[in-house]
Every structure is written in C-alpha cells, then in structure tokens.
Length: 288
Image (tube, rainbow, N blue to C red; front, side):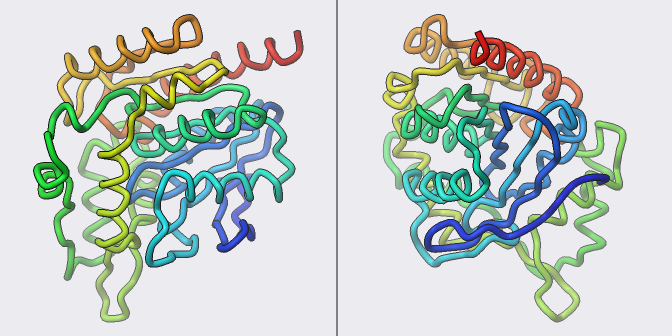
C-alpha cells in the first residue's frame, strides 16, 4: 500500500514490527487479535489515512515481532506498547483493538490514562468467558486452535480468497492479510507464527480477565463496534455491552456493524467510518 512504512522498534526487552500509515493527530494505535497480525488493519487504515496516522504493531509472539517463550500477560503486552509509544513519540493516542486486541486496548486505557485519548473495541472487550465456561479446564479445549500442518501458502491464499475475508471486494488483499499469520517451514509448507503454548497462555489470560473492572478505571470515551453475526450469539454480546454501558456511563458508545467477527477485513469501510467519526469527536474534545 502506498505510503505505508514497515519497521522494527526496540521496546524494552524485545522488538515489535510496526506498519505505519501516515496521517494526522491524534494517532490511532491499532491492535490485532489473537493469532493474527498487524495487516488485519490494512484495509481500515487505508481509509483512515491520510486524515489519521495509523500505527499497527505485530504484538509480541505475532507476525514479525520477537517471540519470547513466555510473558503474554496483558500487563507485559501493554508495557511493550508503552515502549513503542515512547520511541515513536506518541504522547496521546486513540487505542483500537480487534477481538483479543480489544481487551489489550482496554488494559492500555486503564493502565495509561495519560496516553489515551479514546479507546475502540471492535467485536471484543465487552464480555466474560467465565460466564460461558465455569473453569479454565472447561474452556481450555474449546479455546485450543486446530493444529495446522502440511499446508502451503497457496492453500492459505485460496482460503482467504474464497471465504468471508474477501467480502470487502479485494481478494488479493485478503490473501496477503491472512498469509501474515503464517511462516515458511523450509519444506514448502507453512505454519502459524504464534506457537501453540503462547496461544494458550494468551487464551488463559483472556479467560481470567475481568473486563468490567478494567472499564471502571477508564477515564476516556470508549467506542464498541460489535458484529451482528459471528461465533458468539448476538444476545450474549448485547448483555455484555449493556453491562459495559452501565459501568462506563456516558463514556460508552455502541455502533453495531452487519458482518462477521473479522470486521476490520470483512467490513473495512464501515469500521473506518465509525472510527473516523469517533476520532473526530475525541479530537474536538482535546482541542476544546
């Protein structure tokens, strides 16, 4: 994509790979979901730039960023992002996240209020896994991803082009985005970049998270962008969003989008519109 820069940033104990789309302030710090990568935001960022600067990192363990064996708590992931903001000179950001990234965004907003002008949660952030699974043992098997082996990059590209990720009308872009989740093995096949042990450590942290306790500490406006369809029933999402609104009060906004879970890729125009409107509101508040 024209104007996009990709580079590595030293963030304390590790390096994060970053995709930066040029634009204005406040910058948007865009966080991908579990087992995903920074390119998940490409189609949204292309619609936000050049009005808004969009910085999308590969979070630790993902994409081209460093992959420590352990250390995947929300606090450690957000410390990486604090380091990124320090190096990039980002004094205040609108932090946005998709799925697991939405929970990371909430943690960022709660832990770093002085750095957070606003928070966006795209099909994530509001809800509790413990309402569905009484114990981690119950949740563990349901949250464990399938073991993927012996597949080629061409097969991954075909999955993307023939599936819902291509619904935005750009199958080639969808293929590049999905391929970013995988790496070559050296024998002509590919495997997920995120190791199984790291995936499950993150899943357990997500299971243990009390999102509403985080929200009670957040001072900035929070925009929720839930998908009308996807793996979780709409009624469950609505209950979680009502509870979030009860906690956040007037700081909460909710805009439903007709699509599946992977809204940043499936419905980039709609997601970009809601984020742009929110960023304009936040910007007006900063400059008031």
